[in-house]
Image (cartoon, rainbow, N blue to C red; front, side):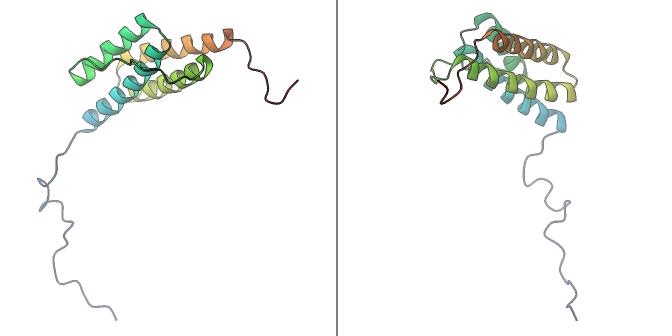
Length: 132
């Protein structure tokens, strides 16, 4: 009913092994972790947390092999929104750091999560929309 395949598959790994660059799982995790930390650095800088930003920047530089660009612009987001964003980014960094057994980044990410949780708890509650 079906005609048999007569040619070799174009998807044979041995024939195309050198056609594109390959990275190890560790290299992929380094790239992902550096990305999460760079995003955390941008939010940390926007919040004006200089010392915390310096610690995050050190880890980004270690992973990338070059110092990161520091955040200069302002998004106009509220401090609670920035703290929630930073908490989420630190959480993502913690997950990746744990999977690659990077204790220094895992500790830093957990500390940042704690700091942003504390900042959110200390912030006054936002009024409900439409409440009088």
